[in-house]
Length: 139
Image (cartoon, rainbow, N blue to C red; front, side, top):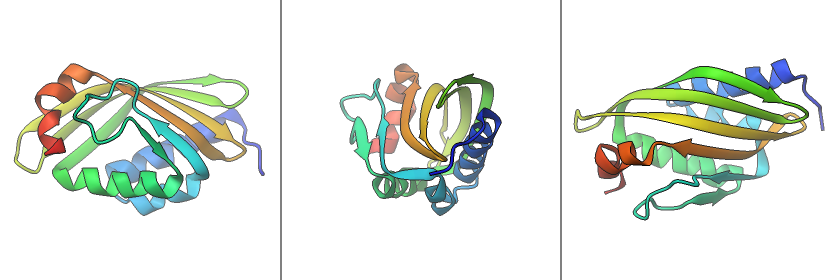
């Protein structure tokens, strides 16, 4: 297991964000720990899940949810490194759903690494934005 310099962890997150923005989810998989956990602590009751276990399940979920977007653009606003193995992002998104309706949100994402892989991803987004424009994505 390789240990990464904090700058390298930020670079990994950058590549993951780029892959999501390009809707190339298979490109995300090499950066994920097999047994990773992804949590959405502020998920709405109608959200399909509040937690995903395993990298393959997460990549499958990304592939499914992003079929509902015409465009998706996640922009990183700030990055915080918390030694020894945590990177925190503040970000926002500007998106167009497949029905042409805008869906924008803001996020705080906490990534915990194990070696050179993302072991944990906690995504906090604005639930009121999801409740309005985003909830149609869940239908």
